[in-house]
Image (cartoon, rainbow, N blue to C red; front, side):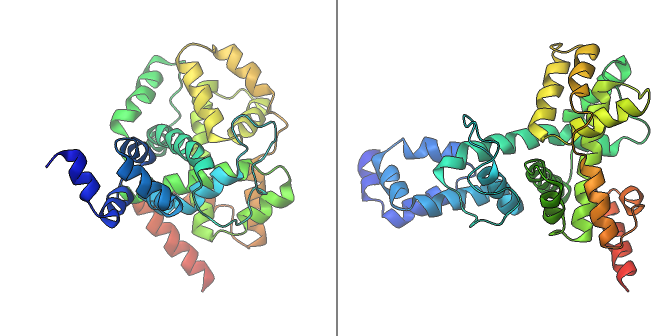
Length: 298
């Protein structure tokens, strides 16, 4: 029997199962274009299949990732936000209109993951791009920085949450957003942002004073896609050190994530020192942080 005939004879529920176990939207899009049988099954169950494949791709980050894509402005929109108020809790489901955002956001965080995770594993100091040894170390991270499955899950979840935070314009909304998370989730979020900040420092160079600090605080409080864009531009030679610093100066007076987080921790009566005592995205440090928080509640 010809392949075309076999597909036509295959029950729709079997084709539906095949579509639902695909690992990502790229494979889904490719398969439904191979034969009308697949396309018809997809069209009939579009919403559930998009969500099934989304869960395959995003795993435990599904809710945060989909919320981010819904809250983001459309790529060509002049609006500063998406279809809902950032930080709110919409009905979390994948629509075809946000698939491209989901794919791109996941790509950004996966590209940043070895770089920022590499910073998490650095034992001493920040490697700087301007230093040949530092540049070699930074370039080695994609090959050498390999997080475990649980570390990767914590990293990606924190990344999506931070990205959602950056969409919020008012401090009141930012605090309300952070208040939704548990103590350990806030520590993981801080760990992500702190090492994203270190990646930004690697482009800037050693600090010369308060102005440098405020610029990096502001710049690293922008979204992860902007940091990755800067990293790629600097690494490719599109920005030299002076160009980068001139750009960063524009963010000197921007809102700082760490200040908002400190206020939220203070309201929870959690010691700010916890932010620096642990590296909770890392497996061993995560367990220590959980125990410390549990002991503090007794």
